Image (tube, rainbow, N blue to C red; front, side, top):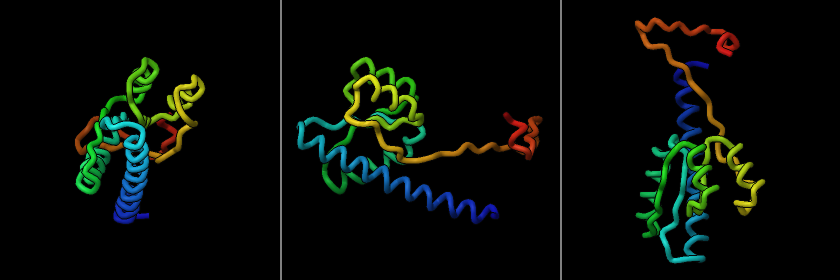
Length: 139
C-alpha cells in the first residue's frame, strides 16, 4: 500500500473516530442534562484535544449546550477520578485505567473501546538516528 493510500485510509479512520467521539459526547451530554443543570465535564487524554475541541464547538453550535473539557495524561486523570474529581466522562488512552476504576466501583460500567491507535516513527532527514526497517529490532 502506497503513502497516498495510507493517508486516505488514515483520513477515513480519523473521520470515523470523530463521528464515534461525537456520538459518545452527545449521549453523555444529553444524559447529564437530564440529571442536572450543570455543564457536563469530560476528561480526556491529551491526544484527543484536537478532535474533542472541534466536536464540543460543533455540539454547542448545534445544541446550544456547553461542555467543559479537561485534558491531561490518562494516568493523571485516572488518579483524579480516584480522588473524587467530578468528571462525568473519562476518555483514556489506556484501557487499564478504566478497568481499574471499574474494579474499584467508580464507574457505571466497564467502559467502551472507542478507538485503537498506532505509533508512527519518523526519521528526520539529516538525523543521526537510524531506524531499522525491521520493527522487531526496536523491541
